[in-house]
Image (cartoon, rainbow, N blue to C red; front, side):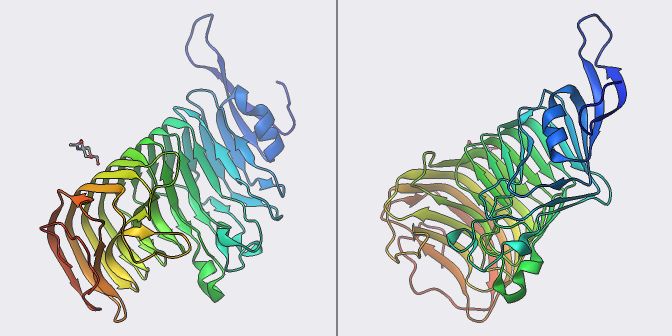
Length: 362
Ligand SMILES: *[C@@H]1O[C@H](CO)[C@@H](O)[C@H](O)[C@H]1NC(C)=O
């Protein structure tokens, strides 16, 4: 048996019998450097109570096909202001899971200053799922990400199931900010099911991509289930998103599509079905074409088309100061919408809706 850092080869097996078969080791690592150095020779990588040093990424990029990654015990990260990511994993047919009782603790409180990614300390992004294909991320238990949690980019057929992200500690004194749970871009086939999120920004934000599903989710404390903002990036097409059977509570918005003021692009074939909301402080349903990070302009533009939107079965209540439905479309840019089963109580009716395509109503 060979030893490589703290790599322990617990068992050696073979993928298949035959002279050309590659050895398939089951490896347990207790430090990040050994995991990075040894990742290429393991079929199963167990990450056991790893303390990732400050300023370093737990780097499991370029894994060989079929690798399984198991987070075991508690994974923690040292503190320094930097951009991250704290964790990065890529490859084909990768299965990433959390063992029973495991926790990935982002230690966000060390960075939180109420400014998120808009200023203050430089905060590391949490998890890059960039370039994962035919892969699973499942049963991860995450808390306290410094800023955005999962960045899903350049992925094909990625299942994200039963991932819990609890950033509720960041609500105290409004210290946690821009803690998006799932940011999806330039991917084809991302299926996020049974997510449980407590955060301070979008629960889901789809900036671009095709064939995206979010189903069976619970979102609390953030900005809701968002498409966008779309426009002004290198990829400005969102085509084929289904967001269904989910609950949004104590959040700014529930259902949201935001396109960037003056930009071009396409939002097509988006369904929101069976979404329940309560405690919404801004908008129950918000589709706005005037978005800018510094603040919406109030004047919609029509360079991003928003077509084949199906809003079906959106129920619940918004808070007294909130607006139930806000639809701010550019001239001619919103078309072919379906709208049924929208039943919201509380708050106010908007007086500012613009270019609303039938049969939608504010
Ligand atoms: C619309 O998007 C869904 C995925 O959300 C996809 O299954 C369906 O085929 C798309 N419809 C069209 C007409 O492209």
